[in-house]
Length: 177
Image 1 (cartoon, rainbow, N blue to C red):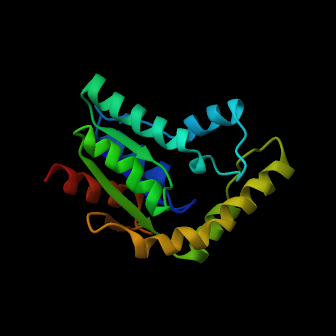
Image 2 (cartoon, rainbow, N blue to C red):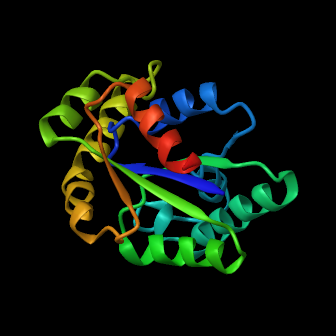
């Protein structure tokens, strides 16, 4: 099984996955962003968003499926994935491989997202780069908020203002039911 934790930048995806991992010891954590970082070293990303690379989407699906198949353990994936076509492409590949995907989306108000992003340091040793990353993540907030309206019916919408413990309990209760 794959538990995909989706939401805007600053919504708490990684924090929730850390909390889930603390209560689900056999789960693996897979961050698809790493595949994006590798691809950026190899090829140009004209749009600046590695999700636009078909190779990224293919490799994410292959890696996630491989982890489940090889290790027979649940995989927790914290990743913003708001383009419906990209989401469907990855999730369809996983389902074709016979892997159950449980999709959760952290719903957080815009003002809370902005506050969380402003209070975060992405590259502490490079203030200019830090501000660039902060600006880029903020520029993605509208598309992330709009994505809520395009979520598939099987997506579980979570109140991203709950504590990580409360969110993890809700996810675990749903996954284990």
